Length: 458
Image (cartoon, rainbow, N blue to C red; front, side, top):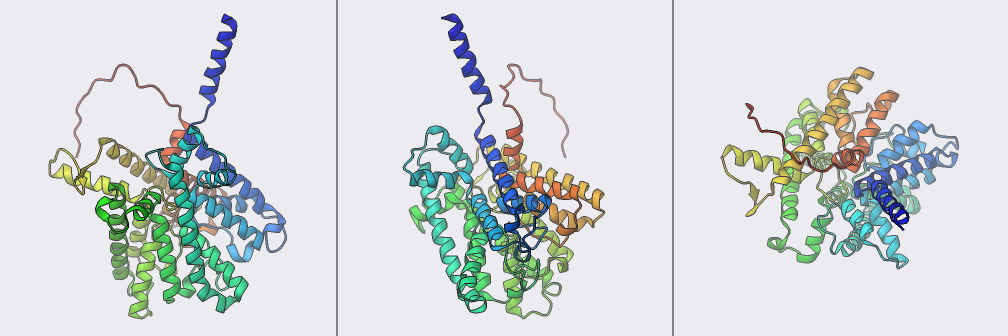
């Protein structure tokens, strides 16, 4: 009996040790999706020429699509067949919503109940703080996504169908609606201008406004959608999280547009009408926060516009959304703490609420982890390829923040630099802290703390 009991205890202990955490499941899930996508894109059916695509290009594209980034080494329209483009589109949708959200949708279709383990992973994937009501939230995410993407596709068809015909126009409307909502940045406009994104539509109000709305809605986050559906315009009933996201989203969009308008008025926007310059500045501000589309040649940006775009990309969207970056809540947490420390206040917060100390710790870790990833990657790529510092920093920020904007250096990167960009995109989508946590073993806190000693700061 004792031997059987010991064997059972050892078996349970082994299962507990080998059981993956929620972050490890998510990290592994995205890795599998990327590999499967890369293998599919390598097939001859995925390319327009009917030839095998090199694994390096297929892997780069699959990572960019699954991590909803938009950086590409080959033009999406001219290189990939319709089959290959559909593979990319599916990976964009999975990457935007999270594979656990879509898995939950299929479980609900076959009437399979989700256990506590699946609910915990889904909660981690959606980036919500509670497990209760997680299925209801997942259903709302899928419903809102279908409605918003469908509406965006129909509106874009109004422009594309007269230009490309009914079938191709409808296909382009759907593709770009999903890409915009998921903040992916992939486009099918290579037939007009390879790697040119939406530059041919810089003065098209319908296309610009629809894309901006899709990007902003996708970047608000699932919890904000939930509050909007529950309370409408009664902002006082919103979660503190939702209030902060809406405030910071508005501030960043209009602040970014103002700065880009000033810096690019006589630079990349020269020759445009006043209305087109305003529209271009607004689009650039929205898109820089992880959408990846552009309506001007980014290589023509002034130094001020380039730096402003880098800052907007680094911040990105909001938690639990289709966007990347350090997130708006991270930025406001650091700003509020700095402001309260200067004023020698004992606590910090906003809207009549106080933040927990743990929020500051996590915000600091997220900020500096992403910053270090970007800086180290910039040094490696600059040393490996000898490219200009500003362009490389723009590229690495775009990758780690899963934006997809580029000054045009992506295609000229060496194999080593492309691996670095792939790693940044993966970390940016999974989450830099989550990826680090997935690789490290959780250790119990030490029974004895080290003695404290003061140091001089500042």
